[in-house]
Image (cartoon, rainbow, N blue to C red; front, side, top):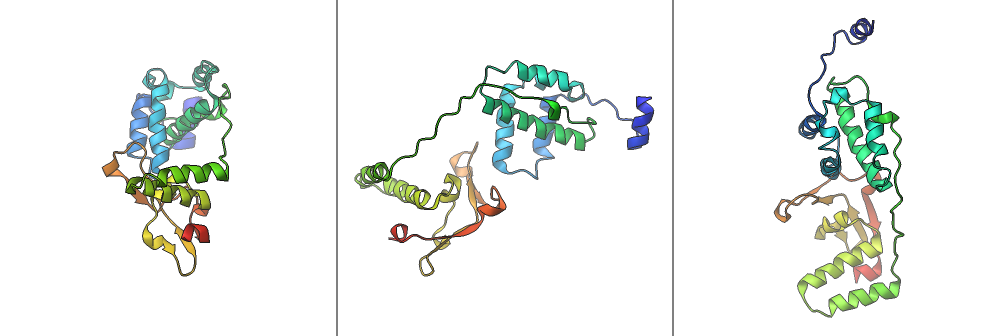
Length: 219
């Protein structure tokens, strides 16, 4: 029987977990999240709003492929990128549930996600537009706007992410060897300003680098 096969495979008979998806999400954030970056956890918790009153109230052991596919079928008129992000968040939760022995298999992996393409074409400003923007800010002669200018120039000439630009310290700039050391980023999503902090856990291994310091930025 299935029960005998389960005992042979795991050495014990799994009791059906009565915890809801919402409860397992809370547990995941508290216990099983140490392998993820803060921004990933923030987005996972933020995605809760899409399913907390539907899938979220169902015991996780009762959520199967059909339940999930029906849920996403009901979101075909929503943005495809949003639906993909929800799927990723649910995948993290179900993977944790498998590790915690609440369920045997992750049902989300069989689900097909569809939706509307609402992505907007990215606008790349010209060098002239950039210079006009910089000039407008510098013309205000205020420290706050001067700081914006420096941050924007660093991003413009290096291609760094906002979180990487804002995390830079003075000693990350080597004016002798014309280099910029990139080894940290600022964590700020979902936090109050006084709670912001820098971390050395970058988005990827390639994010840590030593970049050339262009003369125009050096000046």
